[in-house]
Image (cartoon, rainbow, N blue to C red; front, side, top):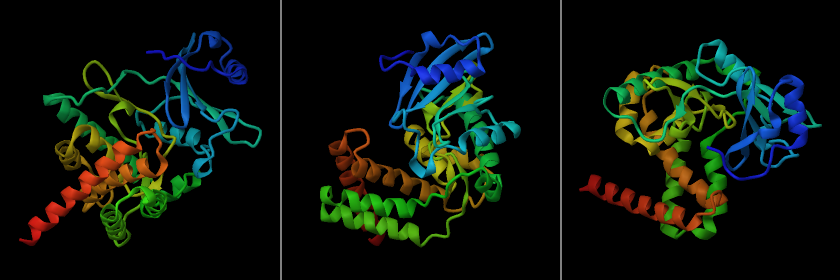
Length: 301
């Protein structure tokens, strides 16, 4: 589905045609827009391609050092047989950081609603297999590819400071306790996608997982992060099923941490007001605080 928005910049069109001389860049269609990226679809005799452009264009992506790691990462994952975008190449800004990344469009369609029955079980097995391979890639290799290290506890402290003016004392203290608990955990590290969610999973007509997209936030961090957002989309029961097939590092405690990361995502929404919906995020935080208080009181009875 195409959306209205700015056209593909001329300099990006030129760079695409340099690599794909037959590409129909004049009819490039905007197919999606997020906080950091706009995505365009471009047709070529060799197939359909996606051109992802920095929302700050002509400035490249700079968060966590930019996305210089993304193309070599996709190539490394494809070499292991993982269903990721193929044949990627960057368009570089003058400072050498990517201002756009071009890749073949993955097969299938993005997942809109959780599958049911046998398809649900199949997705759990296939996604668990994907995450197992991803999380077992040696951290030294991920570091050599240029992926940054990311600590949720450190970032959450920063978000808590930013959000403090908007929080009640009760919510602030609860979040402070949550982050302190995370700080005390012996958290494993792995190569993580960090944004595994339904819309980033592509399935074919048979219900098989044929594509995982959007590695722009990939990092070296806690593998539990890759279960957090999928739990928000599919629910904890699906995550339990997913974990029953998962064979990645340090599965013990991964569910509790993934649930915490879901809560801290809401703190990030308040701190950054990324979606322009801070009041809604604040209501969810107050609800989470009340639920945690009731659960603690029930345990003490």
